[in-house]
Length: 101
Image 1 (cartoon, one colour):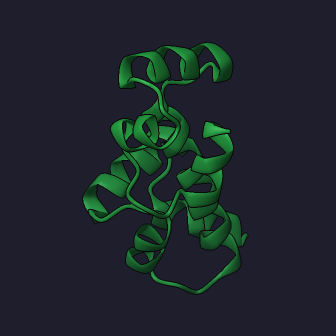
Image 2 (cartoon, one colour):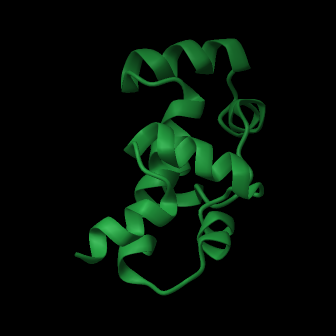
């Protein structure tokens, strides 16, 4: 349920505490259980969903990188670029150019 909620609401500000409150768990329990079930910690899972969505938008739209970052839940463009590169080994701009070919 928690993973589905993240997948459906990735563009919103999500925190472990907010999810723990919503699903009536302690943050520590939710963190452990989430990692056990998904293999990812909360932040990794959330970022993975966001980067997948950003990748689609970079390929399928002409939105600016700043607009895409905001649409997938990143408020800071520098942070978005750093996380995107961590997951794809390319900057968002490099990714868009490579995928155009």
